[in-house]
Length: 143
Image (cartoon, rainbow, N blue to C red; front, side, top):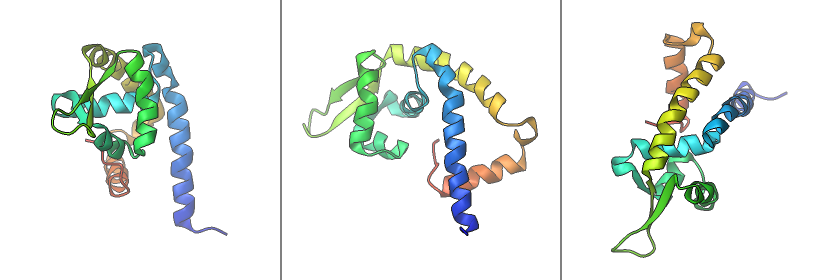
């Protein structure tokens, strides 16, 4: 048999798949769940701007993985690319005004989806705080 720890991580993976599927409703805003997370991280950052490599680290993706996710967001005008004046090897991702507006609209949908995922008994409880603390230790440390 497998350890309790491995089973726990397998269940986290399953929950992640279920959550992602439920967040497909964000498509009404032209976003997927990964897009929403990227916009959230940019929205929270200073000047809604971040180095690509830092954004990759915050999302838990590789540099090439974040580039693949950013390309459609750039094409639709939700983010733009900005070069670093001092170092041509460094580029920034900047959330556009359109990106901010779409994100702000999508937050309402995401909050509604969240209420449908988390049972009422788990909201605003010690149980949710404990689970959040564990996820933070595992690397789920979004602000």
